[in-house]
Length: 155
Image 1 (tube, rainbow, N blue to C red):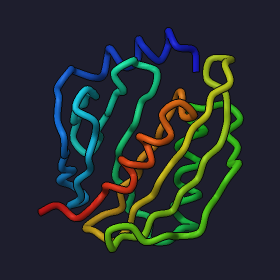
Image 2: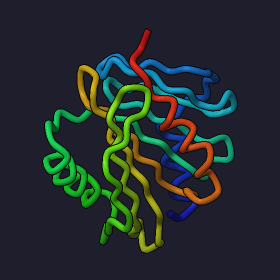
Image 3: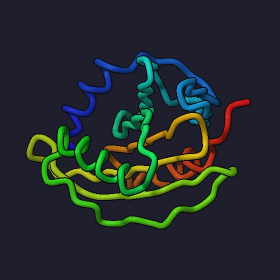
Image 4: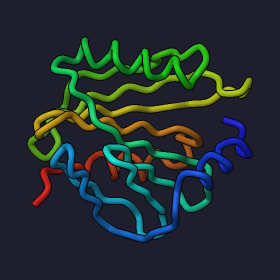
């Protein structure tokens, strides 16, 4: 994604706040983020920004009851924002903290620039949680994996 466009989007949407664990009330789940990352809640939507502003993590709710319905929902959502979205990796469900995680990653274009995205769908709580990473995935993959693996039922 064009770094300038991503930066403008993030600056418009995210207010700096520091935290360790965030609770997503609609899903009944919580997740860890690094202390120096910022976040903002907007209803069911949670936007998380990496401190260098080259990665955006979008957390939202899905009512999809099956992985097939979820995949159709996500392709439709991605097509609204990403030109030519293509799934390059789709994994089977794995269990993390007693919850089923479905992971996908892919490529696409935003404003003529090639981008990478990855997406994790978490089920097993009140509602499904969707985490979509957009931007410099490769540089931040280890931290993204730690965030995805931290998702658990809220206490």
